[in-house]
Image 1 (cartoon, rainbow, N blue to C red):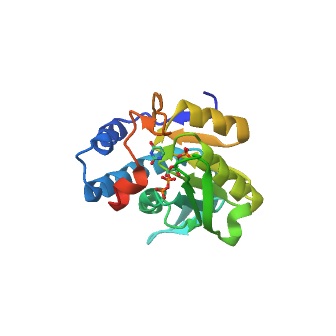
Image 2: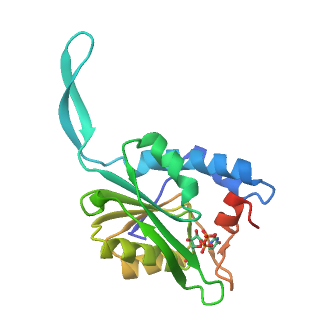
Length: 208
Ligand code: PRP
Ligand code: URA
């Protein structure tokens, strides 16, 4: 799948196993998700362009670097929030926008209820965060939302992707690259990813 990069790392494989485990409680789920987010942030930012600068050490002046474009992190509420702190650990200078979507469990169509973005959205590199890409309805709607607000450089960061979701994103937003820790087998009739990890928002916030 040309629009998908699976981040292959032993630490991710270990941590995804912890999240899949139905006996993992919310507190451990949140800590593990934050750790995963940091590993993913490292890989998703690997090709960022730098601008050279000068820095003064206690001894002399030397060459240094800053990231050339502003980074805007946009979690999809609620489950995307579980990724934010881990991304900010590596990108403390990033701005954070929010988009609130939930999936109508009968129609499986996304419903939007909140959005707020920094002014730099159109100029920066947007990292759209949502741990689950199932039918792709929420992810594709979030990207459309961002594009309507003039965002141009969007990367979609997820944890568990389904083949259906990846195909839908490629169909609706071929310009958006997806980064995921795993590509799972399929969706069940209720639109849940198999084997998956269940409802990510519920598991993060203990609302099952
Ligand atoms: C989950 C998840 C995605 C969406 C994925 O959110 O965080 O946003 O489902 O499913 P899709 O690809 O079929 O659209 P949910 O709608 O459960 O809302 P929540 O995060 O508030 O629980
Ligand atoms: N949303 C989730 O949180 N989990 C799934 O498996 C599908 C959609």
